Length: 192
Image 1 (cartoon, rainbow, N blue to C red):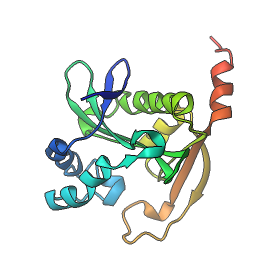
Image 2 (image 1 turned 180 degrees about the horizontal axis):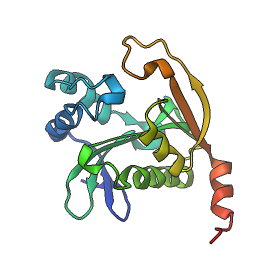
Image 3 (image 1 turned 90 degrees about the vertical axis):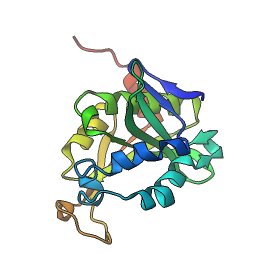
Image 4 (image 1 turned 120 degrees about the vertical axis):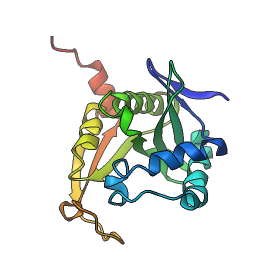
């Protein structure tokens, strides 16, 4: 199986149906699902019917898939997944960045490392013009990853979600990074 992307510590590869149990363990953790559905574990039937088809879906405009299994490079341990998929079916111009990692991977910089690598690949190889990301306003860890990956806050909004989960009364936030902003930041001298 060919890897999509490698960093110093991560391998991002295409999902296969053999990843079903890994996805079940990830989405079965109430802490992982806290800001997704209020912490309800997802069952095998939902993983098979929804999650697996989602992560296997190809996006021809990107030349591949939009979800990537994340593994620790040295050990091969499954850490979770990254999303980098087009918002508009036939154009790579605007992509959504997302990530969902096992609790054991939290606080280790993997989400930032993978996000930065995907952003770089998107702007240099995939024809991406803008990267967006969103989360609940109260999800401070995810917001911090977005900021460390170079995205900036754009706006807050309150959606009409089918279920209310703790913290949803504060709304959601949108972050983004455009290709010109990314290029400009790469050219700015670093201050010691």
